[in-house]
Image 1: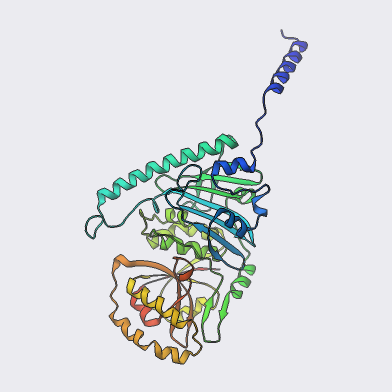
Image 2 (image 1 turned 30 degrees about the horizontal axis):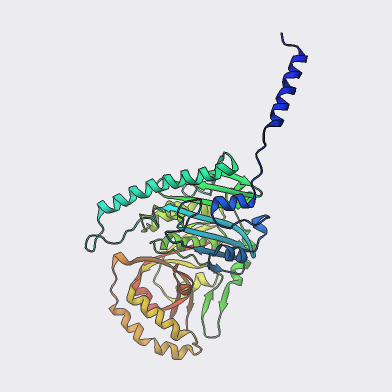
Length: 421
């Protein structure tokens, strides 16, 4: 029988022993920055930092800025490293001027797989298969390396889910540090992502729902009516899809964020079963994101319609952008790029409409190619000139371009989609 005296002596001895062991020091901002390899954290809470100043410190250029949100995205070169591995996309998000989240994408099937033709004008399936195998190995290795770096500083992670909807939900490893949640996700064969978020955002699994009344007021304020007859939606976030064929998930991310629904094009590409390097089935992405859209209190409104100012105006006049499947050809884009320069100072819609006659007639000669399939946004119209405003996910210079109704119908695939309130 062990006496109480012996037990007390035993616990006292253990206390002395534990007291003699060095305690694990709380990691500092410098420790995290050293592991990252970039000067992300200052002394305090990242969410108190000015977003633009943080982006400048990191050297990440501005991608988008609206009245409420901003983003700063960098597509790093092959020589850059974060957590000791190559990043492919680095994004800092801002809300009301303050940093509000980061998304860092490492090995992934969009950026890391080259789908350029390697055998005449067709893809070599054997080469593509080899690249995909290499990409999958890189995803596994990057996850292991990043997890080891974070564990060495912050200890073992906990398992956590993030995201809304079965197709857009990630299984993650989560570390918490000083008001920051660090999530590591690596869906097999898809991507490696590190997201750094406020604790409350991670705890809510990214769920966010803006009240309908507040969203309606916001949408109404985004409709700009210009003296020349242009009706245009402003405050649409830009997402630069980069060199990969992610036009569909990038466009969906833009519209979802515009409608106050959290979104990431890499997650959307997974939900839409996007192929290596790009290529997304619209039907599959609709099925994949439907649950996430509904959980945010919105609904999907697919449409089939001829492109005209009268049909487009029904959505634009409510502040709702339209996702549009069409064909994107070099010659058409070159013409639109030149036209936007000529149109910049357009004040007389009657004269401008006459100027566009040759473009209207030339639309009959446009030939489309199924390989040029594309998705962009329709963000405005001008009834006086018979034009439609479009926005592509290729960077700020493609945020607003104008095309005649005749040209739009010549290149249209006929499918329109609106996220409705």
